[in-house]
Length: 261
Image 1 (tube, one colour):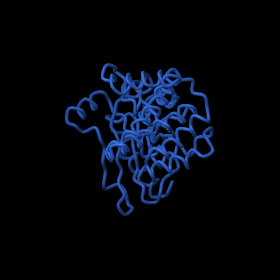
Image 2 (image 1 turned 90 degrees about the vertical axis):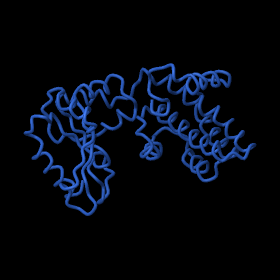
Image 3 (image 1 turned 90 degrees about the horizontal axis):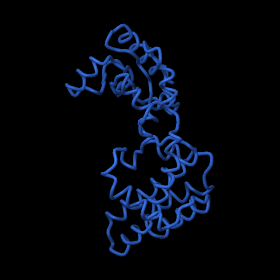
Image 4 (image 1 turned 60 degrees about the vertical axis):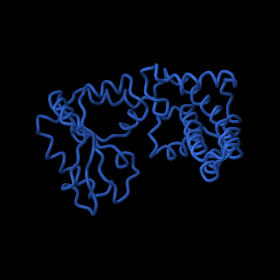
């Protein structure tokens, strides 16, 4: 962490620690994960009392923004405002991006005696969902390969862009699930995928090919790369049925959209 980030965090802690509305201050984002640059902003998670959270929600003020406390050019501090119930909900049934937001967070201060145990539960990979996710992500990859072929036949640029980008997403999420790595949302997806320890040797090359030259040939090469790496235990008929449930009938379920699940 750069000294100017340390200074900003120290100022925030001094400003908010004794305010009874604030129960904890967590530092997340690139700084917490050791990926910060000199111009990085400071990402916060502020845990507030139930009463303050209700007020913030009613006023539409669930984000914290401070443009004055940072002393580097273009610097600022921003973050989410939530309550302890939110932490409990993430630990119990949070989506992967919701969980990943708490990975490696630094505690600036806390008045919550159970914060450490909550954070430990939040960042666990949801093992009870893993087999179903692997099945769903593989099925998406299979059917999206067909969509790419249809897009090329029709010279449909929109369909081609949609199908190839989603195929990369689900092929990658399949590998992340295989490695029990939380999906960090799209900004850090390629970083986590590139650092997954157990993956095809040429995976990132095949992904780069699809993104640079989207089409049937590059997509089939990526799919072959993923299928040759591991027997996922799903045949085409099962994959098409699973795709239907997840992509066309997903409005019937209460879970997050498949892309974020």
